[in-house]
Length: 104
Image 1 (cartoon, one colour):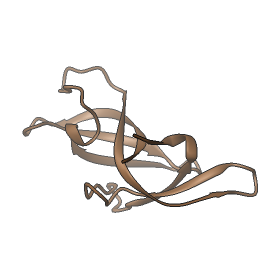
Image 2: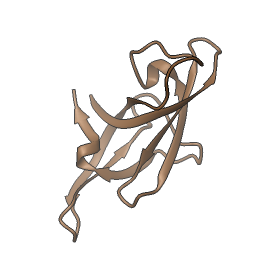
Image 3: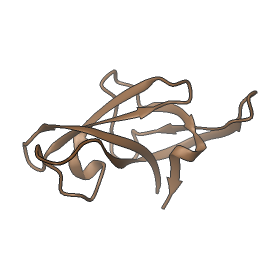
């Protein structure tokens, strides 16, 4: 499964199993916020007393790969599959640098 690297920036809600806000920066430098359950982003046990920011990832599906005119390797990913995660602005597709995506 492919993983998109995110930065977990804060604890949002202690409703089981705990909810956190994450940020990712797309290839154009725009920040996107994703909010979901802690296990959707990390195996760590996080709560309101944890130290933020911390690294995390969200499972994603790679839709396309290409090199742009500046020579950057880009990837279009969707976070809808397999976990149905969308940004707070209801985006689920993001164009990011290939270094932000890993395959596990």
